Length: 172
Image (cartoon, rainbow, N blue to C red; front, top):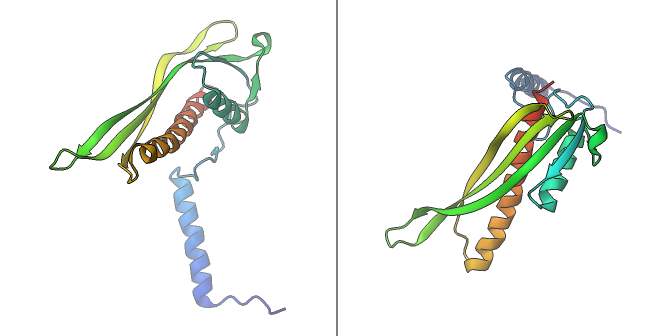
């Protein structure tokens, strides 16, 4: 087995990479999905879902557990009660060409929520989180557009849930 050989050029690359990581970490940049050291500190969270969206409920549950919290169905044992009042996705035309043909669409996902302590004291009054993306009208007609829209909607839902967890993590 050959010995590991670090040349001056490789050493400079390693040093540069380490410095870049230190600078990025120092300014608050993190990889998507990393908690960054802030967590829900084992809080027991009950989710009251008024949206009826199984995918949203699943994403919120996974995010709570991934953020250091615990999910419960029982209201009697919860520290916090998170109410998902509603979610909505909408699409609008973002740009058209000179002939009036659609070039791009804007897709928006909005989640209305509130948070209370188990005793009923409101921690976060009802408010909305929103994420949006613009996408080019795909070749392939309406079926291709619906498929792309569904894919982006899932990404936007994940983004809104991530924003929700960041909001909850600030409420120690």
